[in-house]
Image (tube, rainbow, N blue to C red; front, side, top):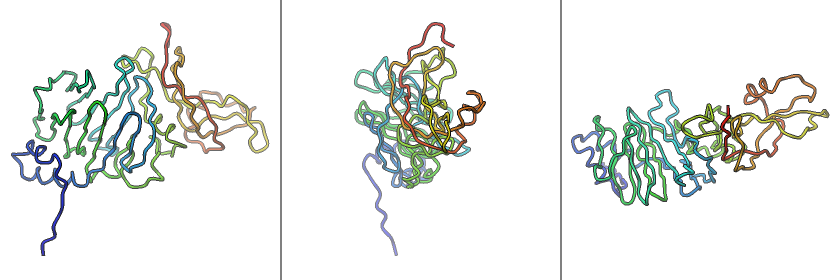
Length: 307
């Protein structure tokens, strides 16, 4: 008895041109496309692989991990960045031995491969391994690398989509989530803790700067912050530190755009002699005593003498 299998068509025929020399790769591509998990970003509204939607208020100039293979193989990583100078969102796809940048520019998408601009007229690009293809599709650019876990990365001036193949479900991480169907576990941060909300979750996936002289012009770091007010916990005056990372400007820089975020805090007796440095190093491993609102930074201005 033959069981019919219905597969999505769409642009599949055109996409299969890249695999014209390999029937096995063609079959693999069609099957993985049929079961791919999709994450979408339109303006600042992000819909995860598990179809949970939240608002991602992006920090300026800092990369966020949009999607990543979180296995030991780390076959791919897709980074997202807001460029304040160009007032756009850019993505960077690192896969195999290539680094692909997609940058909206003059109502089109500029493609860079390993830092070199590739004219749209020179597409499609085919990686020597025949496992990665970059091509024009409609008004945007599509990257296909299903054998590396990425069914498709698509970007035009309005929309960004990331699709991972079926066998990557439950093995991804980043803003797009794990693609495992566990919506209640969606906001899992890099250290495995569940964030209190989408704002804290999105900030946990920021790649912080090491110095305000960083060429990326990302002037922010993630840290445990001390609650400004003293609290009464278990009947005694206490000082509290966040157990979730909060985005703050580097030393020597001041915030020019902020956002309120509610995070969990761990509290200690007010007269305890634990140093601030010790607190910052260990707080992410502590239990949560309460939730409070604090200020996160989204854009910073630095002095010439910054650290």
